[in-house]
Image (cartoon, rainbow, N blue to C red; front, side, top):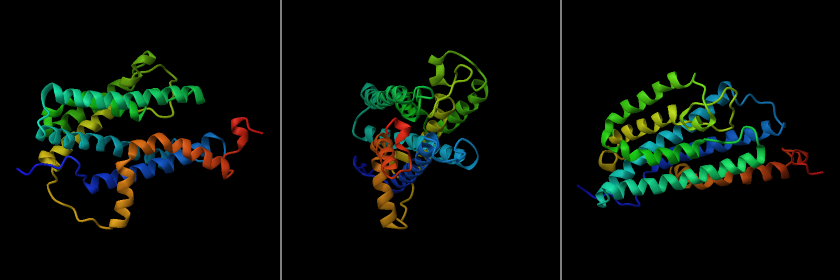
Length: 255
């Protein structure tokens, strides 16, 4: 069997992730305009709600797909057992730490509605949990459907705030970005299962011809740097909106 190049990228995955990044920036641009009272757009319902869910769902599915490929590559490099678990614990805890840094920043910046368990928290914890499910391979699709189905039970349960990561929270809880483990981890598992079908041994079943290299290369660059873009896009967007007058400076107590 041909060894997988550890730095080999699949353009189709990076391109889809790049599309999701573009969708995220568009949605957060609209969110900022609405949040600061400079636009009247129903971002929490209808088309834009589905737009946001599609964006988040794409990211989360690709996390699972990429985890499968990453695991196959690690095994080919001889990383197994405890070493494999350590690899994903370290990576997951790093992203989880970034998530809680955003929790602190949003709590200080906006107070109510701060991000308690958003998409970075979900991705970080999912990566930590992934070694428990690697052996299921294609059966992860079934496991993922079960986790999603659990949401039918969990959604109506009220509980303490410290259970928000699981999908249980007090009445009236609100967060501007909330993706609890149930049901979202189910989509990670479905991505892992799909990866076992589409990328057996970490390699694609078929090679796809790049339809438009210029476009896919641009989106691919964004897809390869999705974490960085996620972290910096709001600190970049808000000053731009302020300078262009799309957000009044009075929103920040200036002038």
